[in-house]
Image 1 (cartoon, one colour):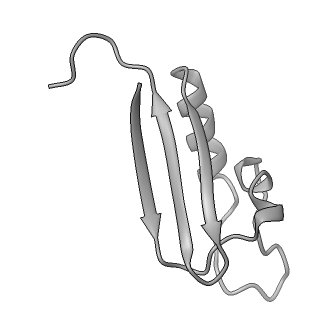
Image 2 (cartoon, rainbow, N blue to C red):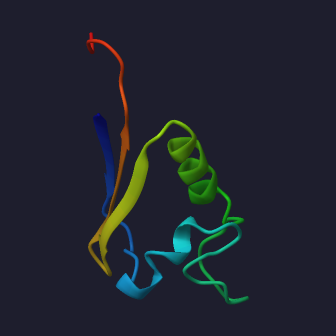
Amino acid sequence: MMEISVSDNGIGIPKNKHGEIFETFKQVDSSTARKYEGTGLGLALVKKFVEMHGGEIWVESEVGKGSTFTFTIPIKGKVQ
């Protein structure tokens, strides 16, 4: 398996929202007064692509400290 992680130092995601962020059209803040834009499709699409290739994706995050998204993908042969 190949494992890839992407980290940021943004606002973070509350633990009780970790499962929801990978659902279509779900956002951590869905209020009409939210500060950040988006449709809630990005992570849902990434999850679908990763799973289509036999991988997994997950998030580790702490509010106020940022997030790390990690996914695995099976590989064949040697990695160059």
